[in-house]
Length: 275
Image (cartoon, rainbow, N blue to C red):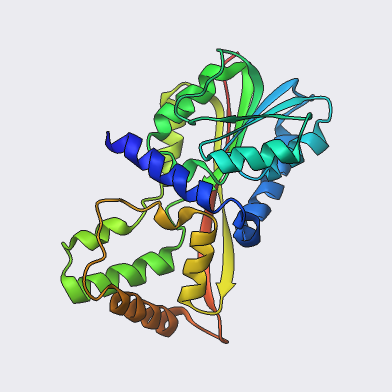
């Protein structure tokens, strides 16, 4: 029940923000460009069928279509509006499906290539997702994915923990509002445990700069991620004061030249299904 509730909450968040996603998804656009280069380095020939998990508004599908014009790309997204945007963008050129990354609605051994950009950090059961990717890949097929690792938004998370601890204590339920990103080692272990071959997980750091914490939070909300935190957490009385204190802490610790940094750690995954 908890997993289903989390999926529904995340789907609704991205569904609501589909229209403004591209305005805020600056890091995500850079991730797509880098992942596109990685894909090209891993495939010796064009795939006939490729799947993009978490296709969003279609940036990765567009990159696949440019690089492999003869391929038949399929985009999948948990948020209906996101899937619709990709469908309209690629009318007649790509299929899109409104479905779950943990329950892919495809037959075994359907695709030579499965890709995903800036999506898997929101998947609750990543091992199940990786297993589903393996199932729908043909023998020798490749999984290429990029998603955010555990150093993502560390400045914001650290200032949030500091503020909540000072006002409410280290055991307060509000600590549960933080999203837990996975480490590189966790991802390597998951893939190795599932029997993928030639597994590579590399990391890169992307940094955005914002005027202040409210602008940063608007950016996070604008890509649909603002409600991806645990639903067990509650704001409660004085929540605005907590946010104001957190913003002051952030500015004093990390601010400079009228800007504050926001760090994103990107995990780039390449794994091949056994031939």
